[in-house]
Image 1 (cartoon, one colour):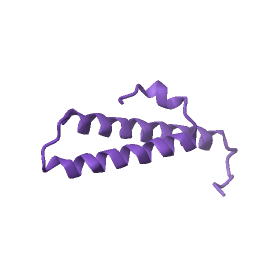
Image 2 (cartoon, helix red, strand yellow):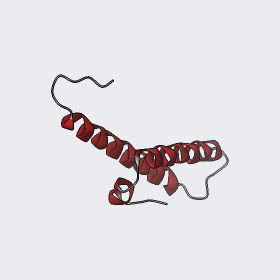
Image 3 (cartoon, helix red, strand yellow):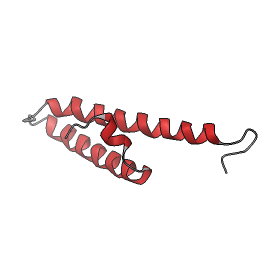
Image 4 (cartoon, one colour):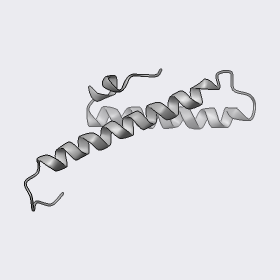
Amino acid sequence: MAKVAKDFKALSKQELNEKLNELHKQFMELQFKRKSGVEKPHLFKQIRKDIARILTIMNSKQEVVASTRPKGSSKK
C-alpha cells in the first residue's frame, strides 16, 4: 500500500489524480470504521502520508511547468 515518493514520480498527472481520489476514498472508509474498531489503525497514518506525497509531487510538477514558461506569459 505505502509507496516511496519515486514510485509516485513516475506516474502521469492523470494517474496521480486517480490515485489521490482512491486514497481519499480509502481514508474516508477508514474514518467510518473507526467508531466500530479498525483492525489496522496504522493505515490512517500510512494513507495520510501517501496523500501528502502525491500532493507534494503534483505541486512540484506544477512548479516545474511554471518555471519553464517565458516571463510575462499567463496560465491560460
